[in-house]
Amino acid sequence: MSNLKEQQAIWEKHWTRLIDKEMNLDIPKPRRISIAFELLAKPKYGESILEAGSGLGLHTLHFAKRFNLRAVLLDISKKALCFSKRVAKSKGLSCDFVLGDVLNLPFVENSFDIVWNDGVNGYFQGKDRQRVFDEMIRVAAFHGRIVVIVPNKLSMLYWFLKLIRGYFIWGYSGFEDPFTPKELMKRMQKTKVGEILFVCKFAELWYMKPFRYLSQSVRIAICGEKAGPTRTN
Ligand SMILES: C[S@@+](CC[C@H](N)C(=O)[O-])C[C@H]1O[C@@H](n2cnc3c(N)ncnc32)[C@H](O)[C@@H]1O
Image (cartoon, rainbow, N blue to C red; front, side, top):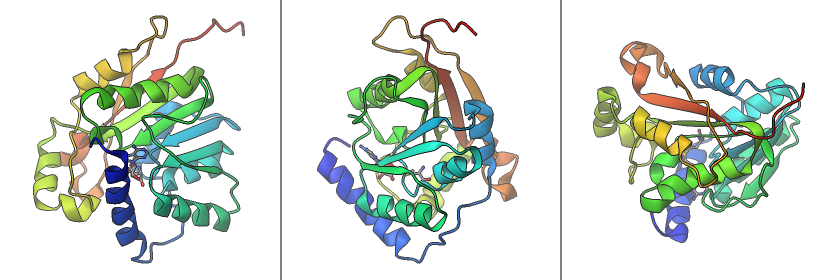
């Protein structure tokens, strides 16, 4: 997607339709995605976290509560952010909500211990496809973790579900280009700043219980650690 306004209009429509179906305000119990996130990001008590393209933000709110994280949720959809705010308020969580663009994150370098998202980076093509990674890495703190979860291009089940039920499952039928593990690794390692190195780990997510084995590779996750000055302790 090239035009930000156009992109915003699509997502606004998407979230309006979903949220108006009286979505439950409960913060969900840990699902496999949360377990994978926790294994990769290893959140520590009191750390800061940014979800870049937070949508409903339910996972980040869950992590914020569980690990007492200082959370910032960023999205281009006002509707989605309003929903997240309502959930946070109902759970007594104090978080920041930012209307913004993942391609131009409105934060200075090295701001967050954890920067993550789920199902966002596949919506970008061309130069923007790398730029989302670069921006996430830029705002991550030295030794901070960057976690990106995306659909797996090599998963037959992903294509099957997309073909027959994608629209209903994800509610969004527009452009999405999933990643191969190789591309995901390359995007995380590629950086404009030479001294940043990444440690990459993969986790396969068992996303949907009924398809437990088949769906192992529907989504893939990667975690990079941003290199910085050597730690003394
Ligand atoms: C598939 S949703 C994933 C949302 C989230 N992981 C969830 O579970 O609710 C993708 C999200 O990315 C957001 N998004 C798309 N393009 C964006 C951009 N340029 N800047 C910020 N957010 C963006 C959309 O508004 C949407 O909320």
